[in-house]
Length: 338
Image (cartoon, rainbow, N blue to C red; front, side):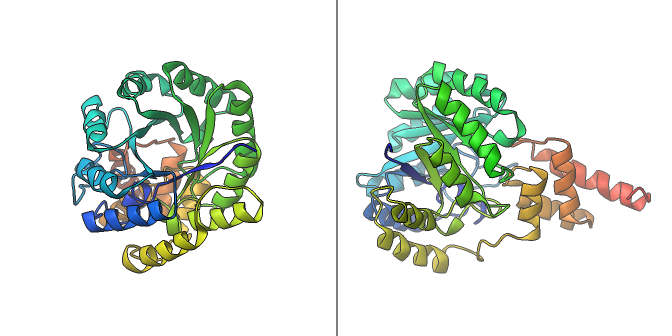
């Protein structure tokens, strides 16, 4: 079996959990711990990627490029990675992140919009970065469409393409179908990014590995949007039991998990009713906080908002729609339609 390369996403996906308020000290502490544990890739940015700090997505406590710089200074042999969503992050953001020490980037688009990634992938390659395509909300398109879009990213120069279960909505069969099709038809590596909203993140990740995915995302203590991602320390332990070597020191990860659990997590990453409904309805995992705020504002159940967003196939970048949906549901409720 080919080596499995794990990217730790807690310092990016986990930004959603802490309201994008990571401090320099926290980023340095976690990065140092991950480097000591020999985690090969560490992703650091605002939860919505480079340039995400805004009124719409939530302001960061610290400028994300400065967080990248802090991480790069203590990352050792680990590669600092960033996420860039075209339309949120720009080419200039990417260049600044490179100057700050980032040496890999995942260029993320909605699963049917890979064509918008071309200039960002090409720019990153010209900078000498490792570049991966990141097809978000991959559950919402059939496997053949996922393949078509992955082939576009490959043609632009991506070193690999991730199937991204942004909503935590995939069943193991969904993962198997998509990963197998990409592995059979791409010349580059295939990756998988899970969310745990249906309590399937680890199981789905193991299916992805079984089907040939070699780039895998994890988040220590499940520190990620919704119910979190594949729990890194758990995955490392399971893979060691299976005889699959990741090069990661399990005990060091467990020690770091204690710090994250005690000093960073605002509460345990349980599967709440809200995060479960996101997986059930197929809604982008970072929408939960926005839905809860909108529900409180208009006086309705956040779960109703999430289900309606799922029916409308709302995707990342359409956060403004959440309050519109909430207001409409509240109006319908007053009018006796619900």
